[in-house]
Length: 302
Image: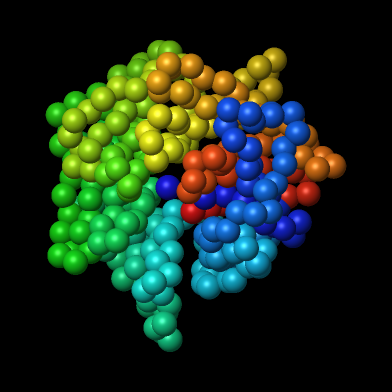
C-alpha cells in the first residue's frame, strides 16, 4: 500500500528512505540512500487546511503538485500516472466513498464509485480493480471488498467469521495475495486483552492463513515480494510514554527484531515518531515516515 522517502524541511513529517539491507540494518543512526530512483506519492496538509497531492521524484529530488482539496485533511489515495487519474476517499453523508478524478478534466469533477451499499476509507489500486475496507452488513466490524473498474462491479469478501475485524491491509500485487491486520470484535467489545493478528488471503478473501499473533498494537504492514519478511509499525506505552517502533518479522523462523523507533537519531536531530513502513521495490531496504521537531504534517504516502 505505501512508499516513503526524504521529502523536505518545509514539510513537517520527513519521509525517510532507509536503504540498508535488512540483515545489516543499524537502528542507531539512520542514513538516506541517494541512489533510489522511484516515484513516491504524497498527500500532506498544512495550517491552511488544504490537502495537497504530489509526486516526489527520488531521482531528481523534486516535488510536483498535481491536485489539492480545500478544508480537507486525511484521505487514502492512489495516483494513476499512466491515465492521469487520482483516486481518493472522503467522508460524506456519514460514510466514506472512493472518488475518481480525471486530472485532465478542466472542471475537476470527481465521481463516487461505491454507491449507497458500500463505504471505503482505506483502499489500494492495481490496474483494473480496487481493494477497499468496508463495513460489514451488520455494521459491527470491517471486511474487504473488490471494485472492478471495467465492469463497475463490487464483490465483498466472504464474512462467515463474525468475530473478524479487519483493521488494515497490504495488497501484494505481484503474488496476488492480501495480508490483513485483524482484531477480535468480542475482545474489543469486552475490553479484554486484544490480540493483533496478521493473516494472508488470496485476492478473493479465500485460503486464509494465520502468520502472526501479538499483543502489540499493529497499525501498518508491508511484505517483501518473496513473502518471507513482513515489516510493521506498532505503538506501545512504556513508563507512561508512547513509543513508536518498526519491526521486522522473518516468516521463515518466526523471529522479530526492532529496526527503528522514536528517539533514534537522524542527521542532527531525533525522530519523535516513526510509522508506515514500506519495502522498496527491490526489497533491500524500506521507506517509512519519520517525524522530527521541525516537521509539519504528511498524512499519507504511497
